[in-house]
Amino acid sequence: MARGLIVFGVVLIVLGLLIKVGVPLGRLPGDIVFQRAGSTFYVPLVTCLLLSVVLSVLLALLRR
Image 1: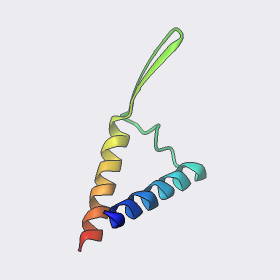
Image 2: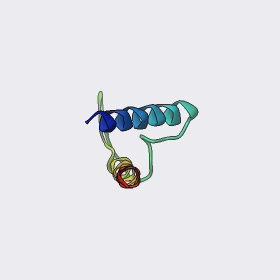
Image 3: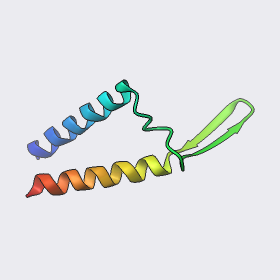
Image 4: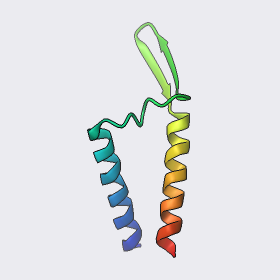
């Protein structure tokens, strides 16, 4: 359990640094944005898929 929490924390730190440097994680092509007068609805489909693949590979490598 402790190892999983440490990995999760490291992943969050890396994602935070990537966003701080300027990697557009939330604005990838394929993310859906609905804009109306006074409101915006955002569905980050591609961002979620990309993060899922990266985390799956990372966790698979750490389990070995």
